[in-house]
Image (cartoon, rainbow over all chains, first blue to last red):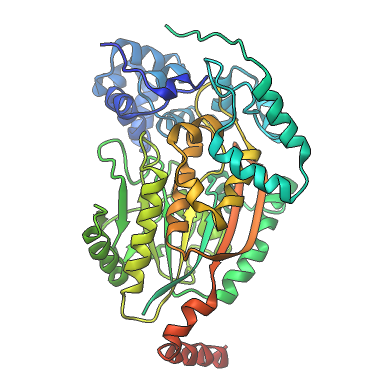
Length: 171
Length: 308
């Protein structure tokens, strides 16, 4: 059955953990939850494939876990707060996982965060909906007038006038 | 009559808890974060609330995917810190206020907010980190300065409650607290956020412009914020930035007119933009009515002062 389409599927690089994924990923998340106990961590490490059988994962889900393909786990219904427990079982920091998911080195990822994080500009939409939210834009505009922040306002209008031609690449 | 005197918004980044627990607070990276809460701790010491309601979310600690309550109110006498995979945080067990909590449950449910009542619940960093930021570091054997009523909100599985729903729940909480007979001065925490995404290829997203606008509107124009649809939070503030709806419960529990006492914002703590605000109800409006009743509380405070 094809996944139902939602407005948030338009957000790039994001797998929203919705009710449907919650149902699909129940096994992945319960597996991850089991790793809160030391005995289970040991059993999993001793024989990963065998241990996973207890959780009735689909073959795709099993493969994603065994390969530590964190993005695929999210796509197949894993939730980050749960899959992070698998990372911790492997002895990885969260930043290591974040770097993995973003396809960068841990150092590059850390530097990006220190530099203020990933910019939202160009990262709002797969289909070119790159205008800032009107709800916040209105409030920010008012505040911007109070404290002169012409730069921010200019940047905003620039985005508005620029026709983004990023075509939707969704199947 | 009990009353809510102030609201506190604060991020609840787990790494802040880890930095505290591992004595890293003096490292420049963490000092930048903790120094932003020094004034807040001073404010809290002076304010001395009788009870705190802490709105937060659980992160696969007390709640798994087996049951996902949208709003869960902690009515227990105590809430032990949860083991989040590295052993429970070395913080004191949180003492509840079962009498006020059950009064709130009764009032709010009849006000058409169908809360889940939790008579047994462990609490994770989502709650204990903001408590540390406002109350300071307290050893495991010590005591938090006041009882706490946890209100856990589902923001992990989409859809979380809407911002409007959260704001209206805040309104119902205010009504519930104000119908409690004892003279209690209550503060309410809204926690989580601000902008951050920790999942998928877009992880690391921060949107300071959004965060600032959110904080700007929180005190005087919350009506703008309650209209924000979930898609806008997720697009602009990151998939996990949607936690910000919890701040609207706090705001809804305050009076229409509030004073911004303090604000702090820094990027990053780990993967997250740290936001913090203290909003106080205006003393005049709320003081007038309970002036007589508060003599007792005032007398008690005096006694405490003499003792100390």
